[in-house]
Amino acid sequence: MPIIRRMHRRHFLILHTAWLSGTVLADTPKVQSLDDALRWLDRLERATAARSNNAWTLRATLEHLAQSIEMSMDGFPQQNSVLFQKTAGAMAFAFFGLRGQMSHGLTEPIPGAPALPQVEDWKPGAARLRAAIGRFAAHREALKPHFAYGVLDKGEYTLAHTLHIANHQDQIVVA
Image (cartoon, rainbow, N blue to C red):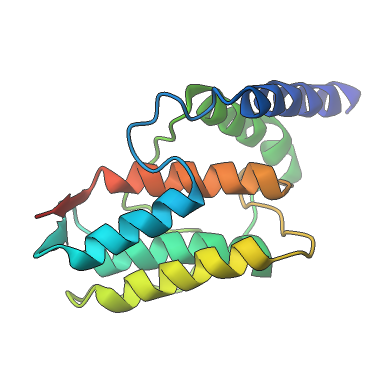
């Protein structure tokens, strides 16, 4: 058990050092902060056309991103084991943070999350994501453990949400 704790602390220290030095998101060509995400939503809402280029509609994608942020405050419906979170989950999060980029299945729902609306009207999804970002920014209470990464503090969750949004930007086409 002490090895797992040390490994988790080590990954946290690596990630925290990179975050403080400003290098974590330097190579990310997409959203690099939650404020950037709000500006991206502004541009998306002004676009003449926007769509998803995979099996999810744009609305489903935006609502998925909102769900993730909301669940960081309210709790995820299903959790991976603590052992998974402190090993594979912690290593994945540290890797994403050091790389400044997340990569995951872009049509994989959050385990146990409510079904996503597969409808073309995406503006309610954009509004929900905007509200979730605002609520997260104002949130001052303890955050809930991530289903895969485990316990994250506000800075780590901010990074996770930012990288998550940037990763999903890869599937969104704006005209």
